[in-house]
Amino acid sequence: NAGVTQTPKFRVLKTGQSMTLLCAQDMNHEYMYWYRQDPGMGLRLIHYSVGEGTTAKGEVPDGYNVSRLKKQNFLLGLESAAPSQTSVYFCASSYGLTSGFTDTQYFGPGTRLTVL
Amino acid sequence: AQSVTQLDSQVPVFEEAPVELRCNYSSSVSVYLFWYVQYPNQGLQLLLKYLSGSTLVKGINGFEAEFNKSQTSFHLRKPSVHISDTAEYFCAVSVPGAGSYQLTFGKGTKLSVIP
Image (cartoon, rainbow over all chains, first blue to last red; front, top):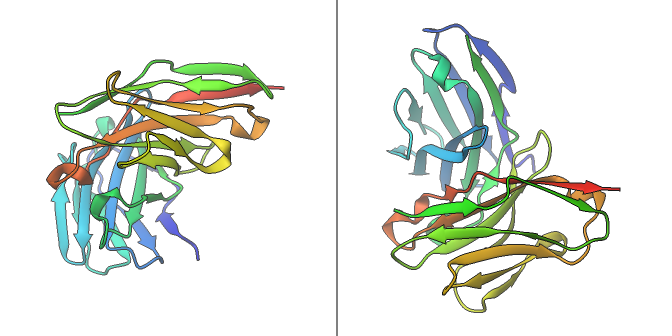
């Protein structure tokens, strides 16, 4: 099992450009999450999904959109990147069906995004 | 809303010495508590979690944590650290029920093990 993978690992954007981050998991998990990690801030939840075709806002959703068209994939989009979105982005997934959100979340290796 | 405070941003400790990483939380309702570890250039990995029951929770790699409701704390301990324990450790809290999807993380504690 590859677990949770993220593409790309690094990206540099100019202000106003758009991009999509891809998260894939091969554990048949129902729940998936996108976080951002900033120095001295811990992780903050951007969006999450409790199943294919469903998404919901987390703590810091502004400037981001997500889609979950397939159970194994969770996409994070930036339509018009801003320097404030420079961060490390982590995707995570969890089983979810029997224990809800208390299941262990499995994290991907992260995507380091710089917006100039 | 709940919050998490990790009292130390950096903790240096000599190899084979004991370590305690402190975590305090604030919440008006009961909570679930977690400790995650992030090794350099990697994602987070669950060390242990407290949902209910025994207040002493044992996790992977020899770590354990004790839930203290009266002091609203969930400190992480290891009796003897190894070089491989060098990493950043995050305490997190969630609220049972409708809000349990959201893990609220502390700012992290960087543990440096000195040979």
